[in-house]
Length: 420
Image (cartoon, rainbow, N blue to C red; front, side, top):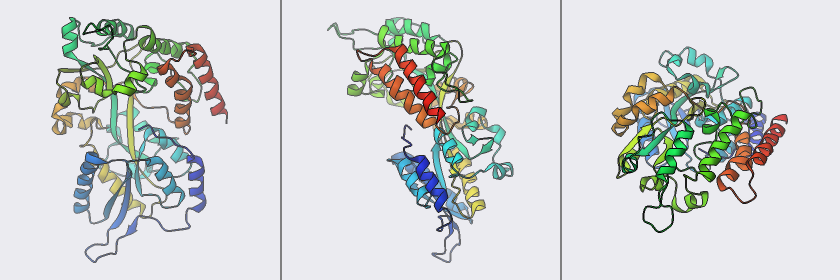
């Protein structure tokens, strides 16, 4: 999820000032004599079909438990803005979803609970079963603040029919340079009207620019807080992306994508290759034969992994019961999403998603080198600087855009941000 985190510091500091001034949500439910369960409020961005699936999981847990009653709070729009307001008003939900980039900031400001000790004493969850880079996104300063419930590595989907028509091998285990040459052969005017109507690839700001940077050993800011967007490795990656977009032109323009859609063009058979999440449903929603593979590489293997965790509010009362609800939810979530964040559940993916059978090799291989953002409290602000100064201008390629200048300006903006 790409959500702004404006005013988070102010709101969360206000939380610390007002904590203790009023009661909280994890209260004993005394509305009836049938049960004195602890009410546990659980905030989620889920809506529509996902919310229905989540509610079914919660209903089953509530029926089984004599300790808690989970109440789902669905906030499908402006999730983080509303969540921050609730926290600042000392009305935080007991449990909440956070995508990986928010956890360090919330932890640093004391808005979420350190569950390290709870987790160590919890025999129902094996921390060693998590993919190491996945669990790392729920940590800050060696303390655990939540449990990942989903890990979505970016993989490559491709239209087998277009490759077959062009007489090309499928894009398995190839470099970015090889990918570009292949993309040129798949970018064409198919109806002779002088306009390109089929492209080899498509990029619109997803996945994050790190997907290219990491495959050449670069990045924006390293784990120690050093700006590396202007290193030779990062510059090489950005030159490759610039080639894809504006030299070889194997992707539609940003303007075209805004007008005709992103995933929609792939589904319509106009795009040969598409980088998407492992849980995407192309296998059952398109009219052509879909293949899957790992994304291309530069000097090393890497791919972005979108990860989210369920965390406990530091404002929660009855913390032991709230943790029990968190633990039980987490165990149920392991059987819900593609990809589960624990290795032991990988083989269960097709029980819920039989359409992903052919994608399992690509997903499994990708999870071996998939990673999330580096953990740091200013991650959202870092991402904002990179988007505003580099990624968005690079995608649009206005007449006055110069890649070297954009890299220099981005590096300067990041260093100024991190110096504050």
